[in-house]
Length: 403
Image 1 (spheres, one colour):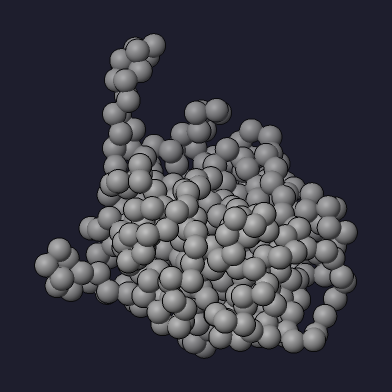
Image 2 (cartoon, rainbow, N blue to C red):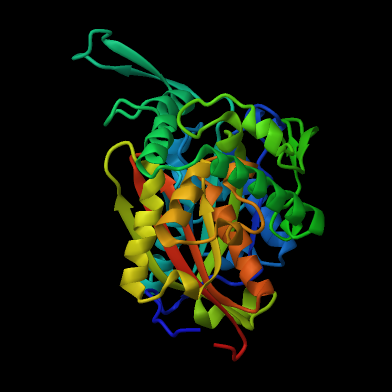
């Protein structure tokens, strides 16, 4: 493994101090009926307890979400109270890049010294998202109502186009073939179900109960409800919504939470279930593509990141991404002459859904677990976000004295 210096040399992700809910699809579970921030705070406490991590070891909390929730003004301090602790902290929001951004900010917090154990808690509920009413005195309507999820998916105020159109435009620019896109979506579903059936995903995902105000069971979140097995024949008969985009080759809205810890390297032994595993932050990059070309932004961002670090795509042991469209993977493969069969080995958001805030957090957890199984190596995480933005990061996983 090539030796590359970490951008945050004192920051580490302690192995075994992470966990995620399953991501049930829009309106398919009891998560549609709760304050997602309160649920996330309570779930974080439960997950950390099962990982034998004491919440009182955490001295700062970074939360991340993108959809308004009740009492959002109070952000991290409110959410930490829901976990049973009173922590300082702040909230971050960067569309679907939120999860990875929150982890990088936590590493910077540890590196700069104010905190030496930072909790990262990301969550979102697309179900029953709020409708906001905005006074707009310069508009003809005077007052505008905005449905936070669906109106933002359907309209970029900077370009006037929907997110779906960015996939079609990018597919045409790169001359992507519909047959390949269908094959990618089919293969990604196979990867997910193989990981589920092998028990791999249960190392990351935690079944969680939802209680009502009386403490009675409202429901149990114990599967990625909404995911279904696809066939190639079925995919090929689906109507194109834009070039190479069908209902089967794009993700779906969902709900969920994901949490992990970032700490200083000298505290790994006291909290990690396997302290011999070292997880470092190697590099990060962000980039904004030209208008209406969101699916190409991740590939361009990865190029920027590899140039910064001096690493190549062949140096990566694990490659995993946030891919709301199968088109994203086709463009990435074309740009790097990379075999898309080799990435997203344990599933991806294209299959299990898109709750925005925690999406890249879960992606990262799965990728780190995969790297541990491989005995270590560089892990490349990347994705796109609203506004034609790309984000990418490289982690290094090593075990004991292995380099």
